[in-house]
Length: 218
Image (cartoon, rainbow, N blue to C red; front, side, top):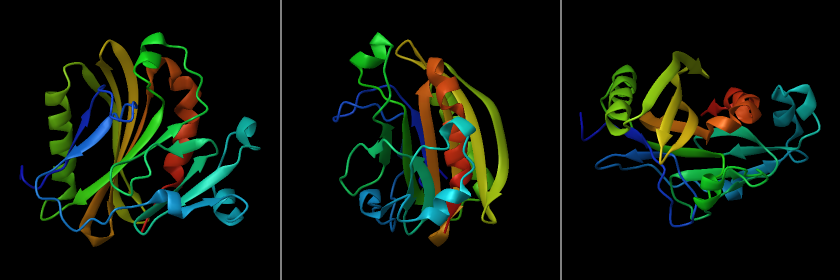
């Protein structure tokens, strides 16, 4: 199972680009997952009004422009101003809120911005429920201070999915994370990780919720 299970590590190490990617996938022998280039597949609200109108937004956000990220494996809607951190055409994908006003000095020093991290791997012969349990176990083992505060199984377009809300402390910073694990076509499993500082949670809770509701698996 160890050779086939993808597991997630939340970490607070600065990447080469100077941005923290809080969720990473680690797997031996991942094959057959084509790179996704979201930059080439972003559709603005004016280009795809129907998709944007499907998203339920908060009243105060009604005038905010929306962008549809549409790939061969999934689609979901992100607010205007969120940008791909690295257009290298490889996984993992990280999208950050470029308009975020940082107030935490330590986060500033680490160049952390609230972000979405996306990655995938083959599920193989592992049952999705076993994959989820193994992911939770490895998370707890990997991070000294971590708590899974809420989780539930559900479906996206009739396909298995699982959500986890996570609190963690890393490098003396407190983080809130929502991880969505979802089965996609070609027997792949995808993870969408929504990451922010605990102190910014109230600012991003509804934004994350709307993005999560818009996720469609293909």
